[in-house]
Image (cartoon, rainbow, N blue to C red; front, side, top):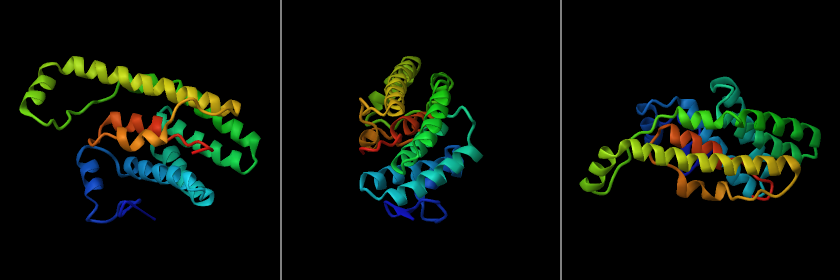
Length: 200
């Protein structure tokens, strides 16, 4: 299982991304979940539904064993299992997964309020100083922006539960939005944007 020349499970000593994540306080399971879910979305978009299902199932196990029940990423894993169940014609199971995902998603705003934001690398000393001087404003703006992602993802989850086409693009925005730092903003964005769609 490889993605972007890195092993999904992250056991290679050359895996600089995993080392950076661990140094920032992430657990190995955090990045493995992200990689599995990202890979599952990509495979689903390529029509490789069986392989996508394998990735999503593995991510769901990680979420169930290693994450708090109210973690938005748990909702994402359930929603992705619902997509796979739907593709297999298991509409009753898909409905149960969607209901569980939506129940967990109700806690997502709490995750935004309690999140830890790390400083970003800035292109100039001026921008670094401005961020430090206005850190409270920066964090407020970040929380407002993430709250918008939370709302859009909830809309998509509700639409999928009804069998409708989602109103917002999710996975196609992931690469452009994925933070380079390993903090809570990346966890929340991954929860929002790695929700699969059966028309990916």
